[in-house]
Image (cartoon, rainbow, N blue to C red):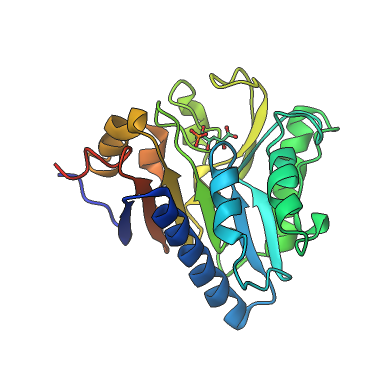
Length: 248
Ligand SMILES: O=C(O)[C@H](O)[C@@H](O)[C@H](O)[C@H](O)COP(=O)(O)O
């Protein structure tokens, strides 16, 4: 059985309500911890089903989000008001339901720039807003990741192993993405694995087998199996469907 070097917590929620409560508790823990000795809480968001789940986990919570800074672990290379934009998804879902959060708290990718410059510019935004901690890498307080049925996370896909091999750039452009739209930018492993907390939120029975392969077998053919914070904690929050092979 392959060994995972970082602390790992599995949360198998038997209902959506419990999954949302667990996600809320995790975000609260991370933000409280971060704001004890920093002026801001830096969180990276993924797209897809996480948009609604995170919104539900934050709505009606007595949380002071005024010092939270929201980044995107990956973003589609489309206009900010395009239905494919992850920023647009959070703007229409999260911001509409949590008006206390200001649009300026979302650190957007500048998709008006050419794709390569857009990735470079986003990396500069991450570096300038997070600063460099001790070593040369910026450190996020929390990254929330999804996982596709092919084991991709962010926009790191099995068909594009070169993106996993990236060892110096923190944000890279992606072309010909197997998941539409084809052009994106994405965090790379050095940045992701430097976070204090990384949490996957994975739901749905269709992902049960890849969840086992990634989180039990740590099968490195799947990009998600490469997520292992070097000085942080890894958490998997999953529902009964996606977690059904974990009980074996
Ligand atoms: O913008 C994206 O496409 C995401 O960042 C992507 O990595 C997503 O997290 C997974 O594809 C899982 O998506 P679901 O949770 O919707 O299955």
